Image (cartoon, rainbow, N blue to C red):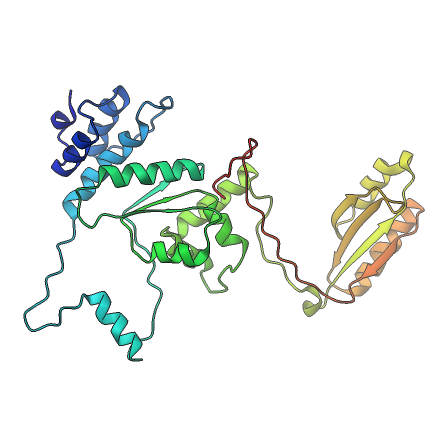
Length: 314
């Protein structure tokens, strides 16, 4: 069986011929016809067996007939494209610039940035003779202006790493009625896809938690950092006693004379004082409380890496 016998689009056959490919690999021979028919596939194959082409070629085949016709201005119109007309209107103050979310027809998720770049390069090679079909890669560590520039091209194919979502959740999360829909609009995802992926990241342990941080004092509550000097032979028992209180938010061990540090969070200052009194009574140890006097905001963003040190798709 050859690629021509499979019935791929002529533009794809031309690109494959130029790349020196005429016959599909076994996984491609099985997957491509089924994918062209629109069947859902779950494919597992070893490295180097041609998996990228196995899913990308039928996808490009289905996208190729949907090519957009070239812009042909009418004789009475200006020679500028619609996008140039909009830019001109903005410069004259007649139109306010608006963010137009990307609407890709295909989303490819790759586990690492290296694989995402590889898929994008392969897509560009296979689609070299298909007019106006663009593929872009959105990766962790990419500056947001560059990311927005790529999405602004309204690509038909968006290649991304799952952790790219983490960057959007990590800072600048939109404070709107439907924030997940807004994040999805920037990524070219549906609102449901964003929520589903977030649940997956939490279940896999990639994220330990996701949620807002409130200024509890503005709601009448109180956060207090507290410390105790716990005898080593009693440490585990005291830890269990302290953690049994619902007011305890975090509990950390430190290499210090004050070797147990924890945070109390309560709805009122009186509840915090009462919790400290109970802990002292149960453990027989004094609790040193350090209420917040001044608030600082420190934003720390760390890229994700694989165990080998290779950059992951954060």
